[in-house]
Length: 73
Image (cartoon, rainbow, N blue to C red; front, side, top):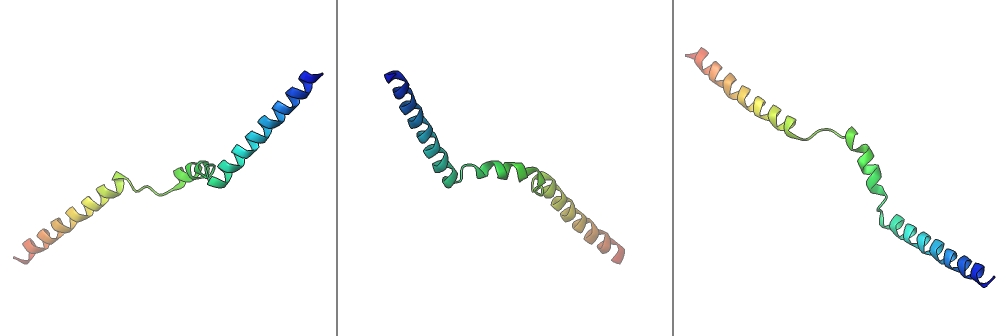
């Protein structure tokens, strides 16, 4: 009978420790990382494709200005 009381007390301590750990992690914001990752595929791309379009726009400006200069001659 003493073993059952000891097991109940140990299990209650483990449950309380688990709840304390869970709530400290919850208030520190560790679980918001999953929300950010789930919304990441919906975010706009800001990678290399944007840089390539900027380079293409810059090149087209120089080509257009050269073409205008040749037509004026």
